[in-house]
Length: 115
Length: 114
Image (cartoon, rainbow over all chains, first blue to last red; front, side, top):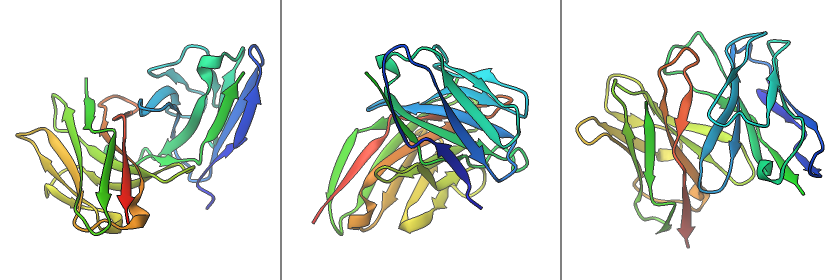
């Protein structure tokens, strides 16, 4: 099991450029999440998905879009990158079967810099 | 709505000393509580969790946490710090919703002095 993987690991963008971050999990988890991590602010939820074909907004969704066309993949898109989106992005997944106490499994992160 | 407050953004202890990282939560219902650890340039890893039952929860690497409902606290402790414990630690509470989202605290960076 690879667990949760993220592509790419690092990326530098210019303001206005677009990109897509890919998250993949091989644990057959129903729930998937995208977070951003900024110094002193912990992890903030951007978007999440409760199953294939579904997405929902989290705490800080503006400037991002997501898609979940396949159960194992959750894509995060930036249509027009801004310097405020410089951050480390983490993907996580969780099984629906384990109940409320089940943990989220995290990917290694993508470090994005927008110039 | 649930929320989490971690007291102290940076804690420094000597190797072999007690580690105490503080976490307070707010929740109108019995909470599910988590501590995650993040080593440099890595993702988050679950240390321990409280769901129901015993209020003293043991986790990996010798860490434990005690759920105190009267104090709305879930502090993380380790009797003797090791250099390898240097990392960032996040307290989190499960939000009650259809997607069971987790609300994270702002994190505490733990440094270990030789």
